[in-house]
Length: 158
Image (cartoon, rainbow, N blue to C red; front, side, top):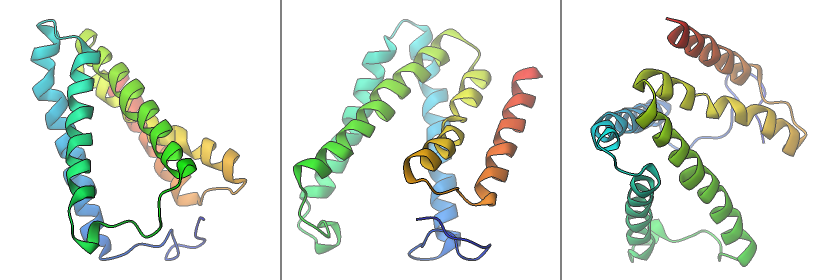
């Protein structure tokens, strides 16, 4: 699952620059969305309702792509009940529970602190991956996680 060595990380398809660019665009969209949502949350919008609209919109877009008749969007294997369950459970935990809690934090606390603490969730995945796969993630992942924790600490203390 995990690569070893600097140039042998998990396999990627396409240009690494393009992957990094898409990741940065996704992060920017997340930040813009939270900033745009803050006034509505402060005005009294229920975070769970806002999360449902946001998640529902994303699910609708994914469903449209899945129904598109292009072979590029067709699954490589036939979905099974177990595979669908493995897709739904993390979706509910990640997008319904976690995003709702993040929106509650954005509504009730300072935006920077809430967003910074929300950004730590990928760091928490490292020990979970280690536990579930019985494979130690590469050192680069741990270094990145440490930098995230340090940066978040600086933001929250300042």
